[in-house]
Length: 228
Image 1 (spheres, rainbow, N blue to C red):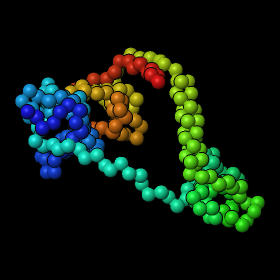
Image 2 (image 1 turned 90 degrees about the vertical axis):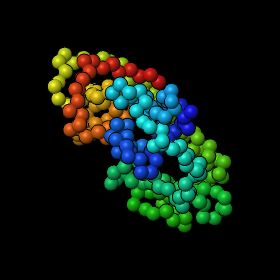
Image 3 (image 1 turned 30 degrees about the vertical axis):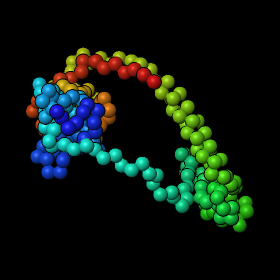
Image 4 (image 1 turned 45 degrees about the vertical axis):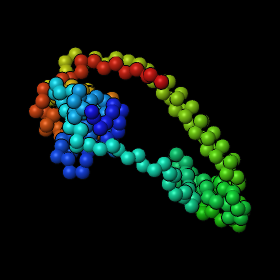
């Protein structure tokens, strides 16, 4: 019987000999998810990845359960400042959010003129209002809903298309999806030389020299669809 079950989050135990191999194959991350267990219970598959034809290549004794971090909010900042997304030298007014300097239990939101610092006594340099905590939470909720609506509309404008490569290249080239080794995922190399997994965007930790040792298979075509 295995000490793990499918769906468990695990990490390699301290001193495990295969830790570096694990990171090279699956990447460096906070935890790995058990996706299959051998009949004996002693061997694991992590994140759906096989090693060559072995569906469960990782020995269970080298892992322990991942400990979820305490679900606590980080310390609250004393104040936060926001500038225009398109700020320049002539357009640098900012918004300052901080506890109100007079009204206990209230937040102050001030719009401060360009080149000025907030001074509650400098009338004309800033426009401010105060909010109780419940009103501030509602404002944050409304802002999030409005921002998410903009992002959804931007995604909806994406056009599905099929890109076909008539002749796949013979070496790793920017922009051409490729796979190697166990063929368990597709990757792509970007202009700065880093290689990322197409499925989840994680950085591929395997050195490029090792990838070149394997038989590389390139995509003949890629279909891009918006699934939101």
